[in-house]
Amino acid sequence: MCLAVPGRIKSIDGTEPLLRSGRVDFSGVVKHVNLAFVPEARVGDFVLVHVGFALNTIDEDEARRVFEYLQEMDELAELESGEDGR
Image (cartoon, rainbow, N blue to C red; front, side, top):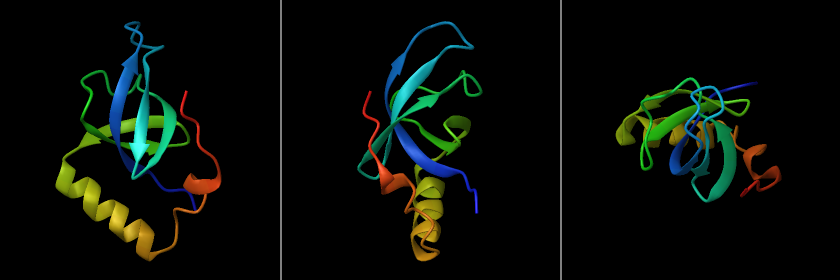
């Protein structure tokens, strides 16, 4: 099943809107994510990420609830399959 996973933006690279990307922390696993769809997102914000693209920003409480649901459903295994800490 493919789901969007919440993560917190640790850093942002680039200023060109379509090329903007960042390092996102998914509860200890850091991945490189495209931020083109969330131009309003800033370091420290939570975003929902699907297949390497942040789709929208969410508040911390919602991010925590979604992450807990995904853990309960055992849907986080692919996150832990490798760390992309670029």
